[in-house]
Each structure stands twice: as C-alpha cells, then as structure tokens.
Image: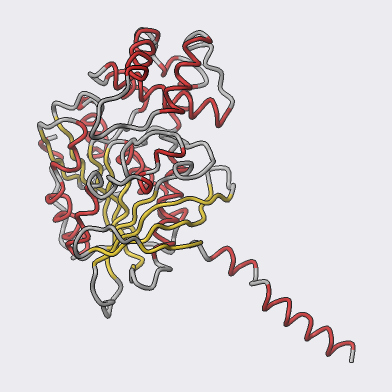
Length: 374
C-alpha cells in the first residue's frame, strides 16, 4: 500500500512540476499578438529566457514577425535582425517604440516570406543593466530569441537562420556567428550580414569622424561597463564628468526623428571635451575589456556580407575595411557592399541587396567573393 501511495504521489508531483530538463528546453515565456503591424505582417511581442556570459538566467524581450499567411507545409526561413544602438536604459528597447517597424530595416524581409526575430538584447525592456557591445551576452540573447520564435505556432519558424544587423547590431551579428555553433547547436546558421559593424571597439570609439556621436556612444559604453563590472572611470575623467556620463546614458535613447534636448547637447559637448585626448584602448580595465569584446576575424564563419558607407562618420570605414581584409585572409567568402550614405542609413541603403544575398544562401547557391576588391 505504501508503494502504491508513493507512486501516486510521485505522479502528482511530476504533473504539477515539469521535469528540470523540460524547463530548460523551453525558451518562450509569452507571445502577445500585436495589432499595429505593416500590411501583410503578423507579429508578437515576446518575452523569453536567455543566459549572459556568466551563465546567469535572465528574461529578455523582443518582437517576432511573420507573413500574414496560412502556415506553410515546411518551416519558414528565419532572419535574426540585430538592431543598432537605441540606448542602454530599460526604456530604450526597440520593441517599446512606436517607430519600431519604421526604423528596423530587417522587417522588410517579412515581405519575402521570412520570419524575422528581433531581440531587444539583455537589459533593454528589462531591469538588468544592458551589456552594451558585450559580445557573448548579446549573442546568447539573439540565439535564444530564434529558439523562442520556434515555439510560436503561427510563426512556423524553422531551425535554419541567417543573422543580419546594423551598427551595434552588426557587432551583435558577427558575435552571433562566432558563438552559434557552440551555444546553439540545435540551430543552423546559413549566413551572416553586418552593416557598418563596430569590430575593433577601441579603434571605433577613437576614429569615428563625428566627435559628438563618439562622446554619446562612449558614455553608453562607460556607464554600461562600470555598472555591470564595477570598473572605475577615474582614469577617464573626473567625478563631475562621470556624473554627466551616467546621466546621459540613463536618460537618453537615440532620437531618430527629433532633435535632442538642450541638456543632452550640453552634456555631450562636455563629455566630448573631457575625453578628446583619451584613448579608451589604453585605459585599463576598459582597454582589455574592449579588446576581449572586439570581433576576432579568425573566428567569424562564412559566408559573410559586409555593407559599409565610405562616408560613415560613426563607424570608421578604414576600421571596417581592415576587418574585412583580415576575414578574407582566412579564405572566408565575403560580399562587400560599399555605399555613400550616412551611418544611420547603412542597413536601409543595402536592404534589398542583403535580402537577395541571404535568400541565395538559403537556396544553396555558391556565395560571391569580393575579397580581391576590398
């Protein structure tokens, strides 16, 4: 009788509490349908599980979009769209913005039949500090977003995916490519596309032509890294300017369609003045951290597409070209798209060419190689 009672009790407990293995496999927490979407597009605001580089489990947010069509007989192809810098504060999450679809070039791929997965990354849309330009943390969030999308029945997302990103998202795309096989062996990476990607972080923060944009991005990085890891900014600037750096990062999201407030402008000018002769690559511990989160060209798998404007004033074209040449030396097939627009239009100006290139990779066509002309 005791054995029967024990067996029944175990069965009840098992029903009430799913096995640990099952809990770990499931990534999606919730998927709320969106109503204000572009024509022909269905989308969900999602919350899902990921882990940071230290293995800590965290909840993150994002958007999954798919064609407004009947579920196809075969799983849909997937593109992970990795966004550029919107800020580091919780309120700066792209999924919270009414301008999300307008300023997310990757969403154009839905018209070509793709499921587009757009993670906010860790800390945007959530209470955790956003790890700005921290490669492993961001790559994990991207890969787990693709996994979560596969748990939405209406999306019909497959396990084959490409990753495509712009600016900060270009860095995220490259890191995702580096870590995909190790972190998410259940997924199959088909192609990687990066528009204006920061690759050598210290060089990018040093050589961008727009000193005011550099000051804001440096503020994002210093605030994020000092908050997450306890790094002191004393070697960079004095305590008064450290306060300005923190306030800039805490209070400002990147404004796409309006001018920044006067206080923001004055703060940026102050930081630009205070750091004009500072090379973050030579100030520890920030220099070592920037190097460890730069993209190692030897670790990036192909096929690869890089789109870069020769007139980019934020991500220096010379830094991107140097990275592309290093990738080419490894024998990686690389498509190079050169443009002349400003930084903010990098993905927009190369949208159709990038989607066509990704589609050809899914179709199994041999990738073009522009290494001789880079």
